[in-house]
Image (cartoon, rainbow, N blue to C red; front, side, top):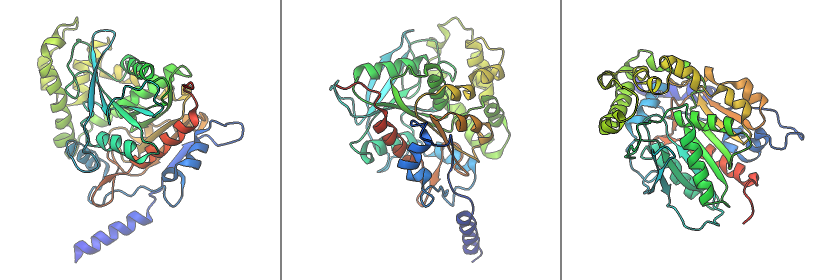
Length: 393
């Protein structure tokens, strides 16, 4: 009986609590015809409709870290929402490195196709196999009007992508993403293009948008759980805690160390003298970044790298409809780092903030399902429909 009352108390608190989506964006006006707020308010009910713009977390996934760990735990799950099969394309970058492109429902040969294409970038250590990415790919392909074609760009060495260069990926260098976007745009010159990044992937998307400005074939983009303030993110990942120490960090370390182990010869072939023993002893992401990323790119340590990689200033230079989705209880990329003032001043951007969801979790309902699928699909469908950026074919 006590458990029933506890459950009722929790649900009452949850539903009477503030589970509304907070939309932060520049005010819409006649002078700002490209204002993202106007687009969201007109076409994205799951973000703007007072009756629908709510995120209520799954009752048995209470707390941001639990949502985060659960997301990692079910990474390989296959069900009706995620059971898809990709068609892989290997793409060689200018320096000889390889990025794998996983297409869903598959790559087509029609260069005049006008079907929208969405390029997806995973987070650190992730790839196209992850549950939330497979769910998103299927959702965009089957629920949007006319369907969207999805291509997941797997980082070097990730998702069984062969490492053919000693250079690894990181959150600072956008050259691989730039080449992938140019490649897809050249293949399908008539198709509207969009990009979605998760965590580190969203960091790269934002940096790319800031660097490209108006000179990009992308018509829209989304960033989920972007680490706007990467120094704060580094401190959060180092913060001691039972779930972080015993589940999240060990799982992340296993993934990264597995990539290193599989590609030792190639990693050692470059000009950087890595301390492999230190890498394999690492228990925290900061130790990995000290031993690999900072060393490879000439930073004094991981903290200097984190300061350089933060995409906060990129928000000012974005010139395409961009939506950021973040949570208040994210244990990795806290909402305190989101530059809300910049989203309020740049009419091309909007930030959707929810109270719960953790880092890349966003699980809602029973059984748990991913909440952000509808908001992302609504936003991209509206932005791509209104873009008019691609030439007529």
